[in-house]
Image: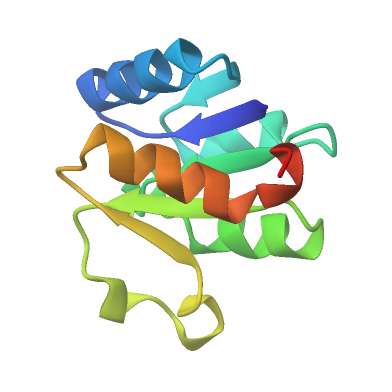
Length: 117
């Protein structure tokens, strides 16, 4: 799968990338700010992983754009899921610190059409 990562902590971004690439996924890009992320969203993405609090603010606008484009995503954050706006309450959420299995399960759950039965 082609995956975009929005994460402002370089160590966490590296871990996410290593885990996903280890499973054969392609990381389209790993960006750390809202200013950067919008340049990397295109319809060829299979999914995105979003930290909530990043350089430039919260990633809720990015999530809404992904929803409009029908691109699956999950939040990967230390924030509380109950802090999500009402329209994003149903979004997939992986709590930090995350376990590798939980992360991979979330990716499979948000983009099930990418995995054969």
